[in-house]
Image 1 (tube, one colour):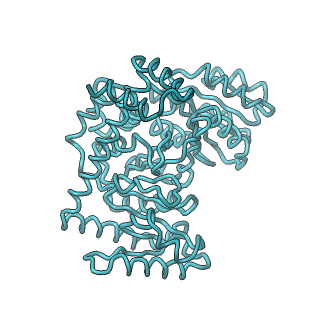
Image 2 (cartoon, helix red, strand yellow):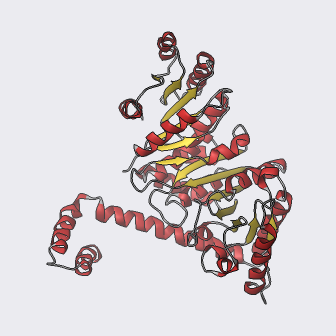
Image 3 (cartoon, rainbow over the protein chains, first blue to last red):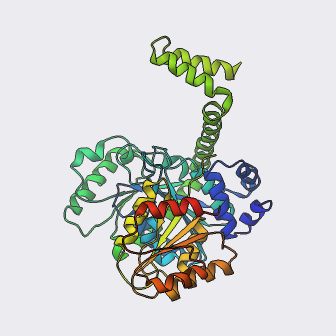
Length: 313
Length: 131
């Protein structure tokens, strides 16, 4: 356990896997290893892939990874699926679509549950990106849970964000709404063999015409049929082109800063929430305040101020 | 801190009957575990590789073709070879009673045939998980 950071840097799969578990469980031994590996991070290109459930995210990742492997690049994949709000359990099934990558030593796949986070990611995902990056993976691909309209946290972590759309999900007004439809660096219309596909492409293209007018970079709209490996070459070319664009325009640094900010906020949030709600110091106090609120002897704002007052003084 | 039991549910071999595996996967999910489902037609090597990357506490194997004496045992052997015998291995499917003691000897800690209550499997895992 002592050398876990060193072994992660050497690319040892079991140490990578174990450090991810420790980070995910907020284990105190994780933070010292995370501190050790940080100087060795920042080399991997982080690609975020988001889209509604069943849009083909996992299949597309499998296809992209296959091409990257042909180029000799190594790939880390983080596949997130929802955690049950009732049992806290999860069924993580993204590996099923990535089966052919299972025996490839240049690919590391980790399935994660959202564990209560709502933005499409999971709290430990920042750590896991750092771990895979430090282990020497050339690319880290983050697959969000199947999203609806507003889960946009993936842009905080990804250098390049792909939004996957499938035909038949609504009329043109849907593409104009805020949220997920705004965050793409590349739009991918998957399942391009389905009826209504031309209309979907046209709607997304007209969205791009509006949002990118006057901008230096126009967000590309690509069509793929992931199951038949169609359009993947073009997609990979666009992803690489976007990376070059980021590097050329200083956007890369900006993007990374955004990620570190999100990570910093997440670490502080976790520790603070843990300090307030899990440590025994406040447990009785909180129960006491909840009683008062329930009996209308106090309001939640005053109670919050009382707790924060104790920490901040 | 919070510690979730992670279980890999895999179907080694060539049969395509995954209903049982899915029912069990769901029951474990409802018992608060994180279940990684790998899908059909896994080799022992694929199962062990996934178990490494996912850092699971438990591997659950389902097989209805009759090849359990070979494939279940391949998995436990390979885990042992890699020094990962702290992973709890359980199995289920159409397994003749006479094979159960042999499987247990080979490191398959629990064997659950047709008609087993899901609760029983959950209890067994919670009681026997080694890490």
